[in-house]
Amino acid sequence: MIDLFWHDDALRHDTGSGLFEQPPSPLLAEQELHPENAVRIRNMKAVLERGPLAERIRRREGRHATVAELELVHDPAYVESIRRFCRDGGGIVTWSTPVGEGSWDAALAAAGTTLAACEAVLGGETDVAYALVRPPGHHAQPAQADGYCLFSNVALAAECARRSGVDRVAILDWDVHHGNGTQECFYDRDDVLTVSLHMRHGAWSDAHPQTGAPDEVGRGVGEGFNVNVELPPGTGDGGYLRAFEQVVAPVVGAFGPSLILVACGQDANQFDPNGRQCVSMEGFRRLGEATRALAAEHSGGRTVLAQEGGYARSYSAYCLHATLAGVLGVEPGLDDPCAYLPDDPGHADAAIASVQEALRPYWSL
Ligand SMILES: [Zn+2]
View 1 (cartoon, rainbow, N blue to C red):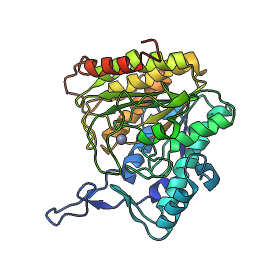
View 2: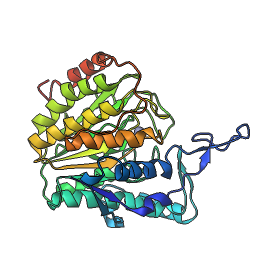
View 3: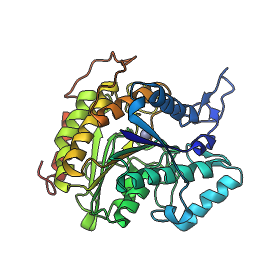
View 4: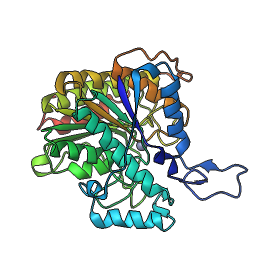
C-alpha cells in the first residue's frame, strides 16, 4: 500500500502559456502551456486513481507548510520575498519560473504535503508515501528560486526527518536535471547523502548554470556524501539501471540510511520536452523496484517519494504509475503505449566509470 498525499492548492499555481517557456509568439495559432502546468499532475492523479494500482493506493490529505518550516532550509528574507511577489500578483521570479497570486498557497502546499508524507512514514502509518505536488523543488536553493522551483520540498523533508531523530537520510534524485538546490542544502554535511542521476545539458542562464559534475563530491565533513551521475543524452533503461547498480546501490548501501527520500521526476522519459533521455515505463518500474530493494535492506522499507519534473503530459503519468508498481513490487498491469525505441545498456558506461573514479576515495566501488 502507498499513501498518496495530495492538496488541491497544487492546481492554483498558474504558470500561463506561450512559446514553451517564452512569451506568446504571434507566429503561432495555438500557444503551449508552460511545461510545468497543472494538467500534468491532474493526469498523474487520474492514472493512479483509475489505473490497476488504484486499490493499492490510499488517498491522504496534504497540508500547508508553515513559514517557520520553510526557514529550516531557506533564508527568511528569501521566503518573505516570494510571499510578497506572489501576493502582489506575481510575474517571472527568475528565468523560466513564473508565478501568480495562487502560487504562494501552492508552494506552501507542496512543501507541507511533502512534510505530511514524511511524517506519515516516520509515524509508522505507512512504509511508503508519495507526495504528488507542484511546484517542484529540487532546483530551489536556500535563497534562490530556480528551474520552476520555489522551495526545496525534499530537502525540507530530509531536514525535518533529521530533527525528529532519524540519524541518516539518503536522497535519490532521478529527475533528468541535476538536483542543484538539494545539493547546495546539504553540500557540507555527512548526515544527508545526496545522489543525483541527471543529464548534462549546458548552462541555461545565469540563474541555472550547469552543475552536477562527478567531482562535486561535497565539502568538509560532507566530502564524499554528494554523488553526481552525469548520464549522456540518449541514455535509456539499461544505462539508468547500470548506473543504479554500479554507483547508487553500493554507495547508498555503505551509507546505510534510516530513511530514503526520492526526488521523483519522470522527465528522463523518452518523449519529454525538457529532457533528451530515453527511459520507458519499464525503466521507471525497475528504478522503483531497485529503490524498494534498497529500502528493504537498509531503511526498514521506509521510503518517501515527492513529485519533481515530468513534462510529457500523458506519458509522465504512465511512467509514474510504472514507478510506483516497482516500489510496490507488483506488475504494473498497464502496457506502455509508446515504447518502441531501441535501448543500448552500454550507452552510459564511460560516464559511470568516471563517477566511480571520482568516488573511489570515499566509497568501495
Ligand atoms: Zn527536471
